[in-house]
Length: 72
Image (cartoon, rainbow, N blue to C red; front, side):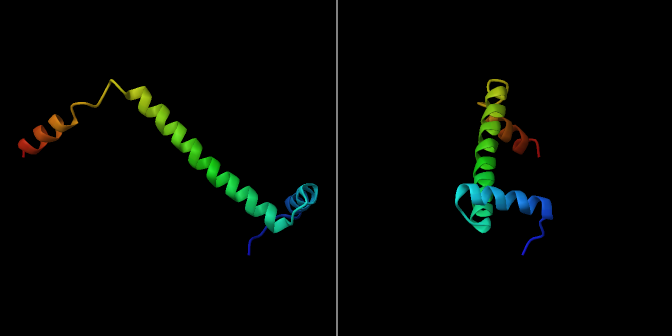
């Protein structure tokens, strides 16, 4: 069970009717779309951030780990 304000519920019902589906079906579709889209957006953002730092870091991580380990 979830709580949905009456105004939003009316909008969902209208949209469901326009799409020829049920309220429950529409909410499932919207949730799936949002969750799938969020994952894709996160992947794109992570790839963008990695590309931005590529060349500034990396390639020497093994050496850095070794230096840190040997300094103990």
